[in-house]
Figure 1 (cartoon, helix red, strand yellow):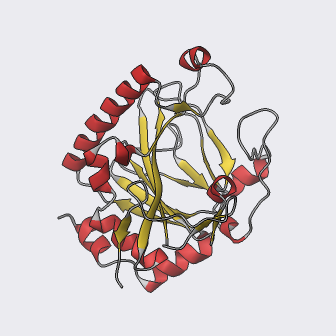
Figure 2: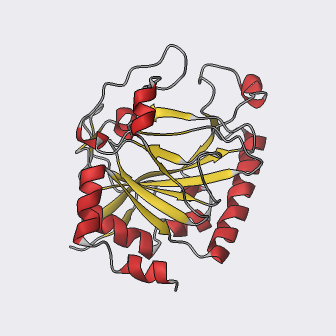
Length: 261
């Protein structure tokens, strides 16, 4: 076990939890060993190759109304696979990775349920951006206290799609409306938001955590390196869908990851 993992097993300090509550995000650094990263990279690449053959993926750089042939010819690609945990035992196991869950428990409490996971892949030289948004603008969950772990399987910096976040933005929900220029629900085009942002560089196997209302985006990948990211979104049992009013029940798709009753 690495020093980083040993620290994570002890959970977060009171100061770190306070920083998360104040800023809306927390940089945890490297949480996965290099050999584990290599296993996940191979599985990630295999799943995306299979998804391309079957069409079981989305290109977030293109509006959903465009046909699949145009998707395949897209100049920019922001590729998404939802619920990797239902396609791969390696990513299923990752949901239960103790160092990650210890941090989530510090932020969310002792009873942790999966909301969903997703792989977000920016290919070299043609990886498209993800526009500014708050996750719960899409999800519409209540209470709005979900926490996301954003993991990278590659070294990530500003040139290949590092995470940009606006500190303190989780305190206020912003109205999300479909952009006329993009398929995003929120498109902040002004430079003021970007100038306020914190850019998070991470090593391969590194992680950061953010609140479901923290404003964030990732720019395009202009390098010859891939940017393979994986996000795990956590909630507390009893979370509801605002759209339907229904509770998000425990299931194979939304398992309990940790419970201390």
